[in-house]
Length: 270
Ligand SMILES: Nc1ncnc2c1ncn2[C@@H]1O[C@H](COP(=O)(O)OP(=O)(O)OP(=O)(O)O)[C@@H](O)[C@H]1O
Image 1: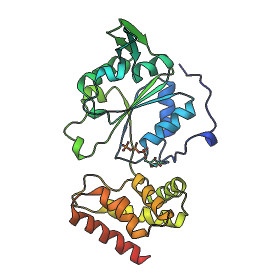
Image 2: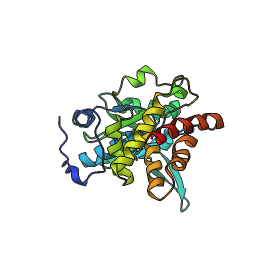
Image 3: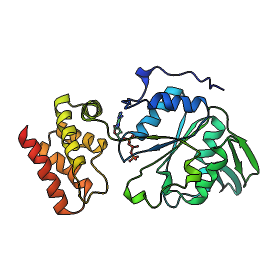
Image 4: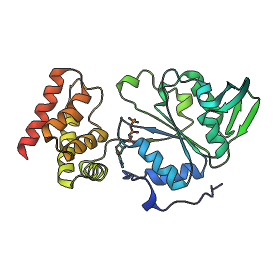
């Protein structure tokens, strides 16, 4: 069965630079009512992609940043007290199901087990959301879609996602784009010229190649955009790179200095 919402023209959408064939894959998943899992490092464009796709498909987007205290009630809803009475308030997942929207759970491995279990009947062919507290059983309309993401970086290796959960989703891997594409993104997002964006993309590619470093994560596209934004507003390049790239990547002074050496060597070559 195919969904029938009007698709929006690409000029009016949030900017998203496609890396592979993810737009067509996502559209196909939506048309076929398949839930989607996005994997990839921080700041590589997962959230922007979902925003872009929700706009393209003409669906409202509910985004939840998952954390270790997130409970099933935070997703489904709860009874509240007001004017001396209790009333039911839908959570974002329930709202998305009722409205045929897209629900995006960012960093889903952070969520508590009970909130992950809630997703199970929604992510197989039943597509139902039982709300125990109100006795309702919601059937998701064809337009509803569940999208989750996680960062398989080393702090999540142990936590991971259980195979029984993972295998309910169609999955796509994201990574930082190649230098040329990343430069285009940085230029567009920060409003800087392409030459500066190319320089920053080169710096990032050097940092990403460093082996045996003590970094949990490497320089993200998001950090390059921050650096470009600082430079655009008059901060010297090396200082901007320290504040927006080296410092956010490590709390260890020696590591920060080592990163600065790598970047300054590149800046000196330019
Ligand atoms: N392919 C892309 N097209 C357009 N903008 C991009 C792209 N990749 C990254 N960006 C830019 O980088 C920023 C960070 O990306 P985004 O917030 O989507 O990352 P993320 O993968 O969701 O990160 P996190 O896992 O930390 O939530 C975006 O706000 C956007 O400016």
